[in-house]
Length: 572
Image 1: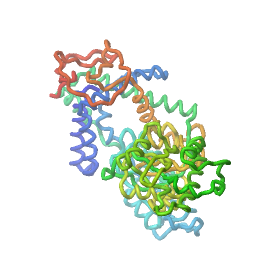
Image 2 (image 1 turned 60 degrees about the horizontal axis):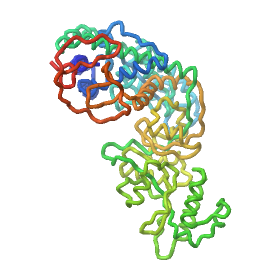
Image 3 (image 1 turned 120 degrees about the horizontal axis):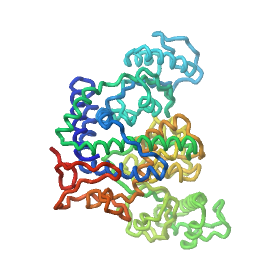
Image 4 (image 1 turned 135 degrees about the vertical axis):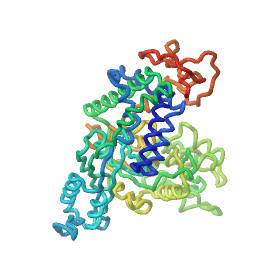
């Protein structure tokens, strides 16, 4: 969307949010968060990105057989856009059993307050009671208090949900089934129940949305003040309609063709390190001092291949020729042998070393460990060190941030040849033990192909500890027990409706020839041809003798308006 349209719509959203906060319809935290998002929409980069996204979609749609619909009412589209974070509300209750609850306690018809007491056998009765209370409009505080007094672990609140299903309060984790139901359902409809990854039952009631009528009335006036070009608004609204059509096409394809899915368990290290952590990339290494093997008899190593030569170059060649699983197993046995027979006068330095940045390693080792072709499971060396020649095994790689706590926890796990996911999760993140027992199935289209979690779930060999990744705000490693290609169930489709399009489009954008070059959107000019490579360099401010308003292929040309140095409509 052109910058003037962004300005008008974002400005209108900010005004509406301010009024909602003053009227106590929004908490201070919600208002601040949403106002920040509204402010982002006024930047030139946001305008460029929106135009690029729309044009790329128009190029992709015919390839995938998706019609390019036009928005019949761009003002209605704009009204939805500026009120999307306020137009949907849902009353959500989530409850479950305490961690110490017996699986087969005696069943009582009701507790002292009339609610079914906390017990596995009473889940259905408690669910029915919550549904009844929601249907008759009982306040959320009353429902939560009743469940709490009956012994249930419970949380609940009225949540504002954006048009993409995200809660207005970013600290909330809204169950995907409830979020998706809130987007497509009607006020008064019950969504759920759905059991989340923590074993809690979640039920929601879709509430009446806040009235967007005042915004609809003010939008044309505010747009006129910002000198909004109506053809730019129409082009943007058409882009919104096309995104919905593409999303629907993707979902239909996944329903019929099926998707790759992975069933896994998580070893949760804890919350993802915040900005106080040190950014990556990181590499996790294990070391094998070759001098410590001089007194070791190769035949004493259980499972070693016949004729194993423990000389450095020969041993490295043997290890590199093995499969990743066999290589890791033999390396671990060699480390154990080296620990049992360290060379005289030296300290044992074999085994798990932990995570290192490139600057933390000696130049030779740093260069070898961070060479671009190197991947998890590779053997490096022999490399000369102060402890003599050594071989190194790349245990894992990680690109995000790590703090001291997470590094120590990951090293503890890495030193364990057979890590117990449940025991470590109890130690590091006791509230996430359900994920260590069974994190369920996740579909490949939920993740971009370049995301670490994608590689962890779909590239790591079965029953092997994966590289670290961030999932749902948690730092974790996974063990995948099974993979399959199957038609998504209802819960998976709900998640794909929220995340599938973004992951798909992010991958397409990374491959696209549409670039962010020094020219403002050259690919959108009819006379230009796409560049051969994509870059992510930040745009500069080139001088223009005659500013040019970008033309969207297939759309009506915009009427002349005052422009800035980028050729985009100027701010008023």
